[in-house]
Length: 526
Image (tube, rainbow, N blue to C red):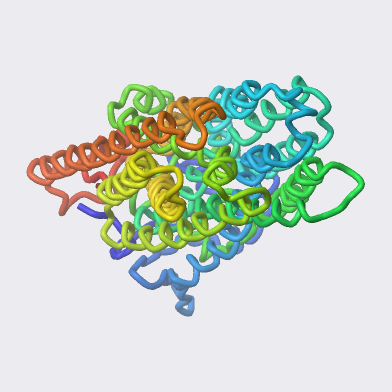
C-alpha cells in the first residue's frame, strides 16, 4: 500500500509543556533554539484538533477562527529553505572532489606533485575514498543524534573547502595525499547525511525528485569544472594555472559553509523557519508515514537491524556497481577525451555536454519515479543504458570519435541518473530514523568501496583504447541492472504477502518506532 500526502487523519497537537511527557516527542529543555520556539507555542494552552487533508491543516479550537496552512505552500517553503543551499553545497563538494582530474591535464602539475611518475596519480585519486569510506557511518549517526544536524552540514563544508584550497599550496606528493585524505573525511559527513536530512522533511512521494535535483548538481559540477578549467587555461597569471584552479574551486566552499551555519533549517521541531501551524502540519505529514523518534535518541536495535538486513546489502551492491563508473568518470573523463583526440583545453570543453544532458535526464526520470513510486525499474533501465554506452566504447575503433563521444553520453547519463534514485530508495524503505541513518551511511560506505578501483582502471599505458577500464565499468553496469530489477521484484512479493496477511483498514500510522520497516501497515517502495 502506497503512503502519500493523499489522506485525511486526525492528529493531536500537544502544547510544548506537555510534549515532554510523550514517549515519542522531543525533550526541548536543553536546546536554546527550541526554548525560543516554546515561548510562541505556549501562547495557547489548549489542546487543538488538527485535520490533515490533501491540501491544508485546519485549526479548530474552541472559539478560534479557522486557520488554514496549505500543504503545497509548506512544501514550497521547505524547498525554498533547503534546496537552493543544498544544491550549491553539493555542487561545490563535487567540484572540489573532481578538480584533480582537471588539474592533471594542466602543464606543470604532474612534474610538481608526481615528479612525472604517472603511477602516483591512481593512489592520489583513490585517497579521497579511503577516508570517505571509513568515517561515513560514525558521522551520520552523530548527526542523527544531534539536535542541530544543520551545524554538521555547515562545518564539514568549511572543512572540505579548506582542504581543497590547500591543494593549491602543494609542493610534494605527501602534501597532496594529506589534502585528499581530509577532503574525503569532510565529505563523509555530508554525502550520506543529506539524503537522511531530506527525509526529515519530505514524504516518500516527494523524496525522489528532491534527492535527484540535489544530486543533479554532480553532472552540473562536471560541466562547470570543464568550463572553469577551460577558462583558467587561457588566463595568463603569476601563479601556475593548476594552483589557480584549486583556489577558485575551494574558497567558495568555505564561504558557503559559513552561510549554511546560519541559514539552512534544523529539525522540524526546533527550526525558526516554521510558525506553529506550519510546524504542526510538517510533523503531521511525517507522522502519517512513520512514528518519529525524539531528538538525541538512537534505537540501537534498529541500527543492528540495518547492519543485518539483506535489503541493505542489495542496495549497497547496486550502489557499488554505479560508483565504479562514477569514480572513473569524474577523475578521468578529461584525460579520456584528450586521448580520443580532443586536445588541450578542448578536452575540458567537450566534457561539458555529457554532464548537461545527464542533469536534464536524471531530473525528468525522477519525476516519473516519484509519480509511480518506482525506483528499482528506473535504476535498472539506466544501468542498462550505461552498460550499452560502455559496450560501444569497447566495440568501436579509437579513430571513430563521433561514435565514442556519443557512447560517453550514454554512460554518463545512465550512471548519474541511478545515483539519487538508489539513495532515496534506501531512505524510503528503512522505516525508522535510526535504521535509515545507518542504511544510508552503509550504502555510501560499502557502495564506494570499489570507487578506489576507479583510480586504477585507466592507466596511461592503455590509452586510447582503455579496453580493460571500459570492460570493467560495462560489467558492473549490467550487474547493477540485474540487481536492481531483482531487488524490486523481491520487494513486490513482500508487499503482496503483507497485503494478504494484514488488515490495513484499521491501522493508523505504522509503528515504525518499535518495528521499523517490519511494522504492520508499512509497505516498501519498489
